[in-house]
Image (tube, rainbow, N blue to C red; front, top):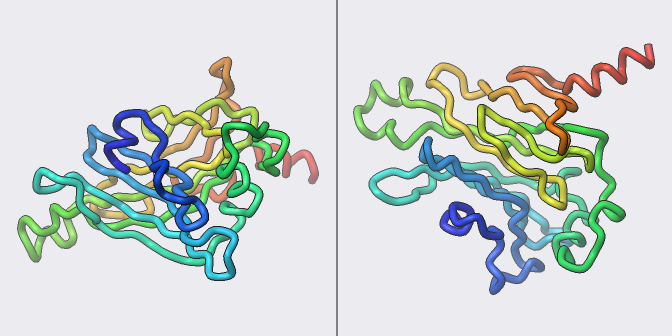
Amino acid sequence: MVRRVLAGREPQPRWMPRRVLTVVSADVDAAAGVGAIWIVWRPKSPRTREHIALLEWYGEQWRYAGGSSGSGDDFVDSEMLDVLDVLDVLDVLDVLDVLDVLDVRNGGAARSLTRRLDPPRSLTTAPWIGCALVCLGRDVDHVVIGGRRLENPEHCRLIAVWTSPGTNPRDRPVIVALGSDGVELSRIGPHDGLDTHTWAQVREEL
């Protein structure tokens, strides 16, 4: 999957049935040597499981660095999976019930595999590999996360990966959502729970 993302191709291999495993999104920061994959096992089944895998280029190959697992939530709903099934022939925006602009959920973090270089000191000094699950509104063209531009996919869900110093695994980059004209629609800071657009709506209601 990493090779497919680096080549700019769809991360879901055509030979892999979506009813068994659906690749919701994948992201690779080649400069930092890290990647993240967001997958769902047995979508639409009572036994649906959501998995996040963090990867790192280490020892001249991509290796698993850590991840998380749990039951599917609102970010992976049945309508989105329907869209992924028929993405080439369906008007996605008429089907998806997406939010207004931006919502972000922590996807997890893992210590860099460089922790193995000089234990035990490196167990606390090695950088973190972190990721976030991002849900976007239909008017968002792309997001900028830590200086990298990520396009808004047709199903409006994506995963973003980054590295941060070894002090705090929750240090998330600023995430900015922009329209097709380059105008900022909203942003969310490293420790914010709500984005600026949502906060503006809340203030209007007060």
